[in-house]
Length: 183
Image (cartoon, helix red, strand yellow):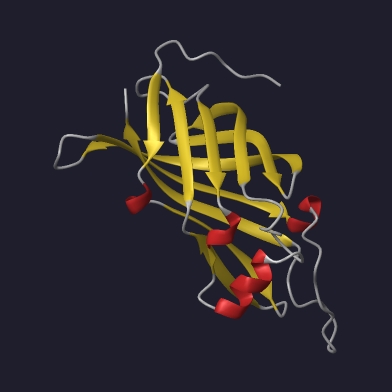
């Protein structure tokens, strides 16, 4: 896979107190259930203010899933879904970051869930670089994508008596990210 070389190396790390990584799935074929993860890290190595060719690595602790329902969170943590006893992390490593025009980027990479690694493409909207009141440079992105959970062995479901299934195969990913400039 092609990874562009970054000439000026700038390291950014996730500002977790101002970021969120989440997902949504269809429930009962018509409504959405949303969730987030509370424990994650991410680093980005880029050009100084140009993210084309950047290297992105993100790690999520699947046991930190939060859907605002303790029973559902326990089910998601169990063997039917994330199997957190045997798989301690969800990992994303970029293989290519390309500028799409305007403020848009396409981020291709490998997503590993439950020990299964598959390629995915995420869309990122670069919101800009700003300085916070303490003089820290922050790069802000909105990231979205869609995956089929079955590609990673997250197969559990239940049939509805009216037809259809309880949980959609499609999972919509969203992340609102603030990165803090480290170097």
